[in-house]
Length: 174
Image (cartoon, rainbow, N blue to C red):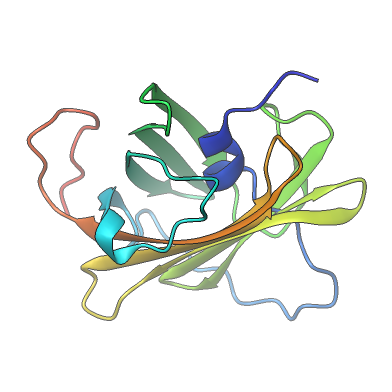
């Protein structure tokens, strides 16, 4: 199996659907309050000791039934990483192309909270939630799972919205 980037595993692959959960009505959106570019605030985040990335920026773009999640950052080794994934928040399990053998399911917990759960061989391997603050200025990502080395990790990453000097992402106008 090809080794999966640690950030991809942490941010993108923590998804699968817990059976028996009650369904939340899916918001019909052509955009979402989560949409836009967000930069991690390391000082406010709680990073796992084995997963100290140097920087992370994410971008959400919601249209119809899809949420496009793009990330870019610098990993612990000082190397640039980045990727784009399309999530479908309908609660259905889908294979993860970047992680053979894994499936994920994504759903809206509310109009301002998105959850993705990942499974391998029917067992939960990770979970990510992205929740917007009431003032829409802070996005909190709670990420837990098992990394490429088989170690469990858990992180709370705090992101702030804003205009950034670098051009990692095109800015969404909201």
